[in-house]
Image (cartoon, rainbow, N blue to C red; front, top):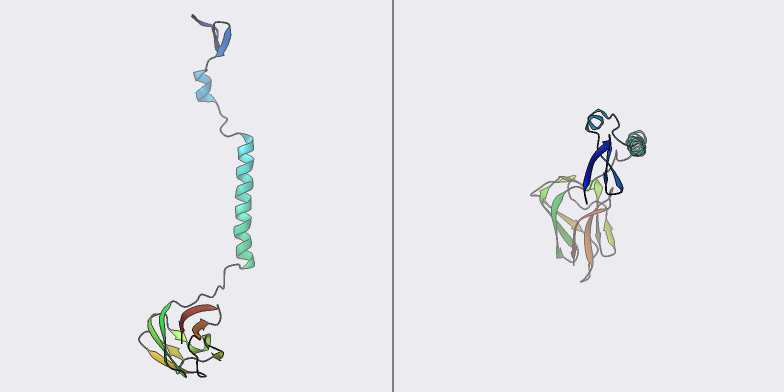
Amino acid sequence: MVIIPPLRRGCFYLGNTRIPTMDLKNLFTEDRAVSPVIGVILMVAITVILAAVIGAFVLGLGGDVDETPQASITLDNTTPENVEIRHRSGDTLNDDEFILNAGSDTNSTPFEQDTLSAGQTANASLDPLDDGDDITLVHEPTGGVLASTTA
């Protein structure tokens, strides 16, 4: 097989096969970058993302999300009628935001004081508990469980 030099600009022949060559001058002066289909897809994607972000701000989504306080709490069932709530560390807890569920009893004001800070202990009086009753301290606005134990 013999390679014949280009007979005309832009191609050469390898046997009976015509093989086009690259025009280097045209390669560096070409002004096309991205195909129109890719450009349209990118524009639609940008428009959808912008609409979602603006819609979230306008509708106020994600604005007033309550978070469960982060605290290390232990519950000790010292007697069948008493639960000791010990705040080890973390956020200060407000009495009016918590419910203590113990067996069939619900105590909507589990703390003796208005707030419970790290290092403090509170006692909650309950109906007598049976062995195996679950005791949970629940943050009422979010429904998050801060601590739980079994009697």
